[in-house]
Length: 355
Image (cartoon, rainbow, N blue to C red):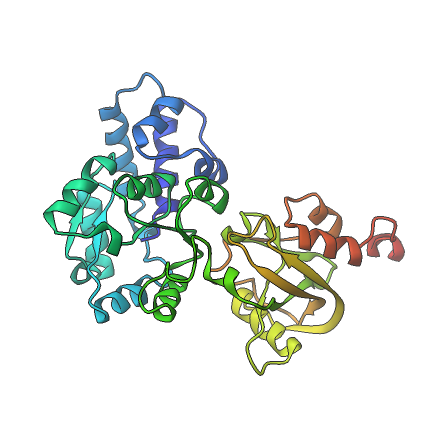
């Protein structure tokens, strides 16, 4: 379940009641940790954990309507059931909240057993393994925080870190998970393509790193009617800002792929497409795994009077800014090069030209 917004808002409410400054969502993701008692001790010292927990659960209960299944979760769980894979839950979430999530999602039949309210998962993982006769070598621990990877390794279980959660790639990479995927859909594809062993061809790296050829992709710097450009932020690019785009499918022309990817990722139709450049991106440092991309970069304009941007699960935020404002943002390197090419510093702005 995607409970990050709810946990963040509930935590801010706890901070308010404790009389300390709240955290932005980015700061919360950067500082939150499990076991969460350490997080509270460093940010709200002097308040008994029992009081903090009472405040949190009251506030979290009020945010339950915002908790939804993660993208790809229903399909992934159904895939696991169809393949006879045993699934368990080990979570810090309070049992009453988890019971509500199971009821809302309908996920209960997919799990052989669930363990919730676990503050330190390392203290429970060995008992879980013994109780259910689990072979660590034939098991994959899937989680979205450093503590999950640490717990997996504590029990000699390979760890799969997923970006659709509390932590970004840089934090997760520090704990050396055996596998790092963008979302559960990517993990399912890995399982399907590697005879149910996602580590078989990875050699402790992403499967895409083993491709003998670069991956061709398309992306566009999209302008609106007044000259602002669209920036999107994604977990897989270390939460840096960039342009929308994606991979070219077999048999698809590059501009056709561009229109499709922009529509899928933003809900926008584009026109006035213009070629700009191709960039080599060989193991880009901001990307969540090793990969070699050929980035086909374009500029484009929104077609007609567009409705608002509608992001799919691949991006977490967007904004319309001037090109010069965009250059001041925390951009991935390829987007910065594209902006510098299309809007060099010494080129008069549209506003200056019209003036």
